[in-house]
Image 1: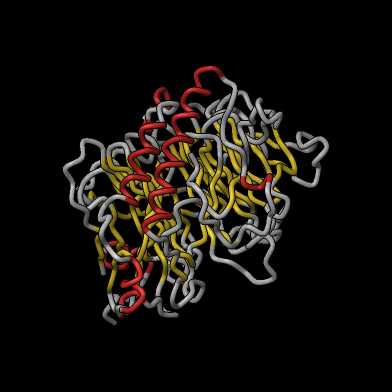
Image 2 (image 1 turned 45 degrees about the horizontal axis):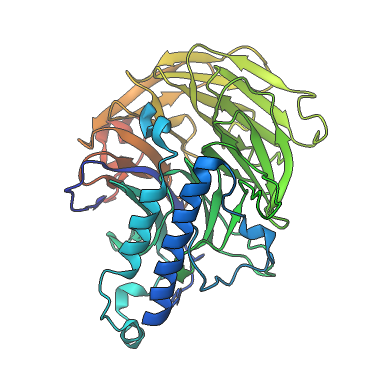
Length: 461
């Protein structure tokens, strides 16, 4: 089965850099809606443009910037109706020029149809607005020219349906997203998405609320000299995020500023900051069982395994592996829990055992360009999928001594920027690319070579 997200394209820049599945049965059946009057919309536009203009001026002088919403009351699960926050694959050299992006985004939300009566929308509940227990959410980061959005799609594998449900306009280009169900200030689990940008501020969005103009809360602040508020958090682009499922109030982030921060979501502040990197941190992942084990991949070609219990001196007990080239992806094996895989900027794949520092079990040339996605299949031992900016998906069969290619496929999507697998069916993968349809959902059981190599029944059987 294959499903596609199709988008009209007249933009010179139009691609999907990040994607993420949400488990079934998590989302509310009918997400809440934020309804603003025309007067409130006009106020939001006016105040936001004024805020952005002021921020642009202060950026030049270095005197002022955004404050984190976590400086306020952390009971921010209920969004306010106040003003919105003001490759080189992703063009890092130009990411400071974000003021135009924000103005365009807010205008797109509020000025599309000024005479439209938003209250009329509440009177009609279309069937496809209801999220079923059998639906997955598919979170799609979409960049089109100077606008960026987080699109929430509905994917139903049984019904073979895929369609957009709602979206959030983002303040900058998204570089990473992570789903989490820890809702600070609430006694119940949430349905939230953290987004990292070229801007150092991490934003958290409540997926159960539609039409949000600003995030539920933020992590980090550039500080404000006029208000005598100190900066905290990252100082540069956030490249990866990892949520700790064993300690759900902890979210890790890796950055261009050569640091990893462990955030306490309940406090909205950094709990631990790790600065023992020589280059930008491009990939991080918590271990699925050993909550204290954080794997990191750095552009200096080093994999570092940290024991986060050593919060005072995180380098204590540090384990390292060194390779040639920048590290793009690090992923734990969900079956062989001591093992992990590393993908590099030159297309290499390296498989390692955390108990054996400095050495690799095997290495292979996986792709012609950088690795953009790696997924172990948690139901089928030895099944690995990889994607690359060369536009190719590959399926691999491996063991404790070697790896061999089973199949490769070109979806004709141009650069493949990302890949994630469905939580309920790990054979179903979602890909984000640079050419229409920009995003695909595909079940690799469709490939006869894969079924034969792993003795997998056909989808139709």
